[in-house]
Length: 421
Image (cartoon, rainbow, N blue to C red; front, side, top):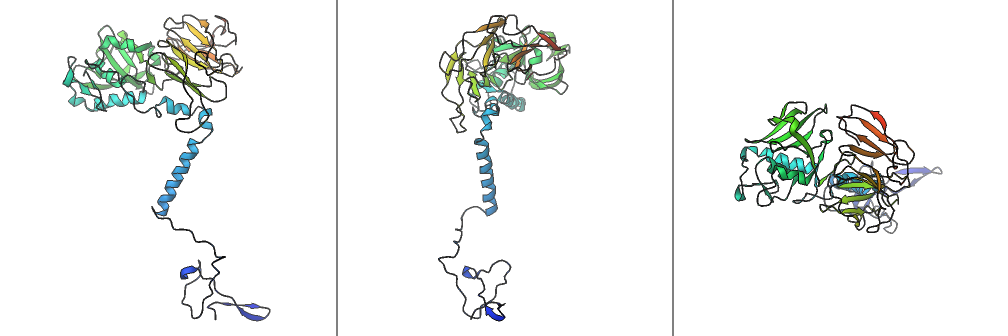
C-alpha cells in the first residue's frame, strides 16, 4: 500500500503515490509524517541530479564575493573604457604607476600626501637649514631623507633626489620647474620668493577662487595657512609681490589646458579610433604608447615609440587642428613660440609627427586649451592672459607658418579665477 492521498478518476477511487524527496525530505508545503506502508521510490535514472554541496564561506558571503567579482570584470572589460577617455583617470592620477621613486614622475595627490605627513610630525621636526647626515628627516616611506627647511620641505613633497644636502636650495628649484601665472596654480605647485630666498607649497584654491591655502616651513615649524590672497600685502611674512609661481616638471595629473610642462596626455594620435598615451620622461624624450584596444593587464598599450627628443622646456597639448581625424601635437617653447606637429598616423620612431609649422610667437604666460569650439571638425585654440581675458583662435586647417589659426576673437574678460579645461 502507498502512504498517499486519493483522487477520483472515472467515478472510481484510485491511489497516487505521494512525492517524497530522497532521504525523506518532503517537498515544500508538504508536512512530513511517518509512513505506514511501503514508499514509492523514484527511478534514479530519471531523478533530477542533486546539486553538489559547495564547501566554503556562508552562502550570502559567497554571493557577495561573486557579485563584486562580476562587477570588476564588467569594468575591466568595458570597451568604452579607452574610447571615452576614462583611462585618463588611471594614468593622470597614477593608479597604474603606483608610488613614485625619487626624481621620477609624481601625482599631485602624492605630493600633498607627503606634505601632510611632515605637517603631522611638525612637533618633532625642527627647522635646521644646516642639517646633514643623521639630522636629515625621513619622508613618509622612510626611504629618503631631506633637509628640514623650506626648500627641503618642497624637495620632500616633490620627491626629488635628496643627495647629501637633503635636497636643493631655494635658488635651485626653478631649474626643476616651469614658471606659470598665479591663476594657473594647482595643488603641489610652489610660490617662490627669489628676493628673500623663501618658498611655500601651494595647497589649493578656496571656494571663492580668490583666496588660497599653503604650507609654509618657517623658522619655527611647518604651518598650514588658509585665507591667503595675492591682494594681501604679505605672504609667509614676506612681500606678496615678490612671489612667482612655479610648477614641477615631473608632476602628473595636470590639466593640459593650464600646464606649462605637460608630462602625459591622452589623444588618438594614430587615428584608429582608440585613445593613445603621450608621455615625456625626465630626460625630455617624448613617447607615444599606441592603444591596443585591449582591457588586459600590461596589454592596454603597445610598445613605446619615440616621437622626439629635447622636449624638456615645452608645454605639450594634443588636439586635431588639421581636422583629419588624427590628434596633432602643439608645443610652446621657452621663447613663447607656438608650433604645430601634424600627426602622420604612423607609430614609427621618428615618424609619428611631421615637421613643425609655426603657429605664432609671443605666446608666453598664456593658459592654453584645445577644443573644437566652432564645431567644424578642427580643434581651435583658447587662451587666457594674465589679465583674465579669454580669446579664441579658430583653426584654419592650413599648414603654413603663421596661418594655422585665424585672428583672435574676444570671448570675455574677468576669467582670472576660473580654470580652463
